[in-house]
Image 1 (cartoon, chains in turn brown, orange):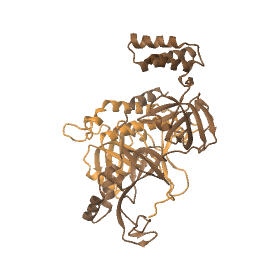
Image 2: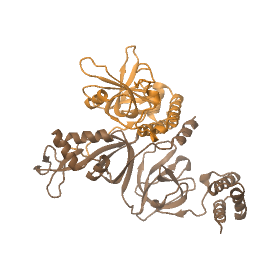
Image 3: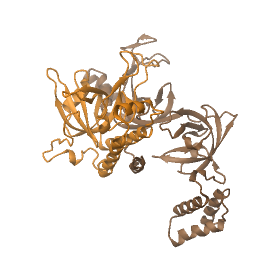
Image 4: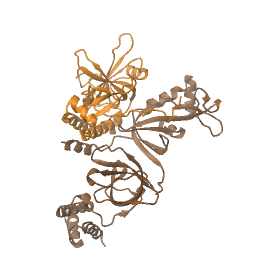
Length: 310
Length: 224
């Protein structure tokens, strides 16, 4: 099959339940757009699909895919793909808008992904901790992060099996709004397996001990909706601030005060935006990976959203 | 100091443009406890005990009598935030003492209201932190705040959102000015979008006159 034949067959399959249209006819229309009018293939597909949507009086999200591909969530790397996933609901969040019925995280053996379900789709609610086969969901991309959207055609089948969710890491992003006490140059209890942070030279378990210096940051990341406590260990702190343990000890020695280290860190990172990924420990996200965030390029879509508000 | 699970939930830092923030005046508590948090009711229908904003510090002034009491004017695309820091906010006060306007700053702080001489209620911010940031951070804040404001406007439903209901009673239910504020803020971002790419630490020309002095684009008192 030529490339256009493949695309034509795909489109024909999508519409097979709705209207009677032949692969040849679709191919001819694609051919005309691509060859005669020099339209890129993706745009041609889009245009042809839209014209059949009109003809069939369908919304895009009512359009089934002849057979969506079953994928692992970690394999999702393209926008607007129709896929099937088999996942466990890891976390449900508070929807930010009335149009959203459910939002949260689902996961399979490959990892986790955000999902969104809309009120208008009138779907059964997913339960936290339960496992489902979700048929016909659409992938979505925002600033390089992928999510899946449930829609009117999505099939939800609850499964008896327990799905093991891989890599229990979570990602948070937002402004770093606070560096909390216990950050900077700290001392830990040297007792075997203890590592508690000393307060005034005392370990809450082992009393007065000769502590060992360490670096860490306990920070708060806030996106305007939720706050997350984040811990940067020594390695992450060194990478984030460029301050190394030896340098920090020297700073403290020069100032006769360990708090100068935390003060310097605070000046460097508070008020800036970060995305942090890592496992959760109690209420903390441990920052295994992080990046500093520049302005998103998304202002156009925000502008049109603002202008479309009545 | 214990740092574990008994810590109460931290208040979210809301994103609000100066234009909307300065239109707020109504504060309330949700419990009779003396130490219960005080919330500022935002006109778009949310309660804010903490805010986070990024803008251009255009002017600092020690307005105290016996003790230092620093006022800072921080300008976003929609208006001016007023921050006040005295002896109980030593870090923020020393930042205001030492910073040379104009400079991009990020502020985390608590909304405060006070009555002006002519009896109006004005709103200001008591900073928890003031840090210098770059233009990219400022731009990100503007687009993020636009998005959060649109989220609030979207969720402004007096049936389901008690803060929308309160806001409607206190300020009315016409959110068109706040929507316009969002649009103009986003448009301003398009206009000076280059600043984040090429001259990350420079302040746009409109805030600097020929002598290099700060020239606040918004005039008037905090109750404006």
